[in-house]
Image (tube, rainbow, N blue to C red):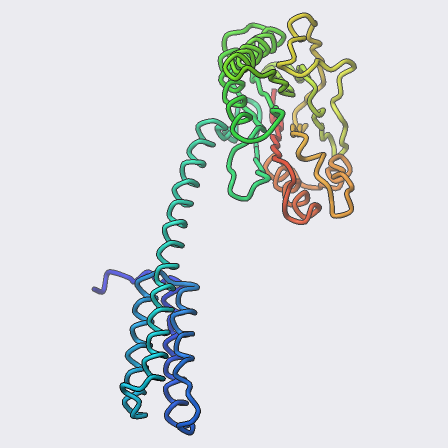
Length: 363
């Protein structure tokens, strides 16, 4: 119909290769001396088709090769001979295996697609993308999974609006696999609850410690094993009406502040111990206050960024690379670091990594 268009896939064009191969073999078989048999080469047509097409198209090309083989046998007067029967049987058997292979491969591909869609849905439910604007802040975030097929892991971040400003967290769960995802789920749920209901930043961190410790205690009781996990985190509060930010650093890498293209670490004198070790309830959380003026950009990151190595084993120099950045805005910053980091390590990270960039546009 004139108002409809065909949706071409690569396989529709590539099918010309096995069809053309059958034609070439047919022509050559007709012109070469009868002592030279080229019909066994017809098996290459379904073999090539199976590399890019599904079982139906592979079966069609295989059937075409079988029919062509029979026609050539008629021309060469080989019908009923042992050679003809052996070649034809081999072609049919190989084609059948290729069709079966294509069917199994397509089933696995469909399962992988479903797993990816579930993983993406789980990531969006657990690690909700931060909006590009939160109060007076422009925000950008990126998550880099170490495993090619993975979408979620132990790195986490979140942001919550409160009456006086914005509270954010970035953290890293010790360990890998599903236990780390479970810990991240508990932590993020506790943070979103505490950020809205607790009046001060130390109270937020205390609530996080209670939730994480309770989760580890329940897991240890269920499996009768000692749980030696913990979570490093940087918990921040950015007031709307003051050009400052407040932070409690629980054993997490210090954020980097970009001001007038100068990069500095926001390090606290005495970082708080990581969450889940059972010591935070008996220690006083130190709240550090830093200037955060209009135009300043802050980069929060997990240790997967600074512990990434190049082929020679040298750690990624984040502060040094950021000093070379001449762009503007949080989105441009995270994209710059992401591209530079992947190029530095050769395209594949050894650990998950997360980054959140903030820029105050007003106060």
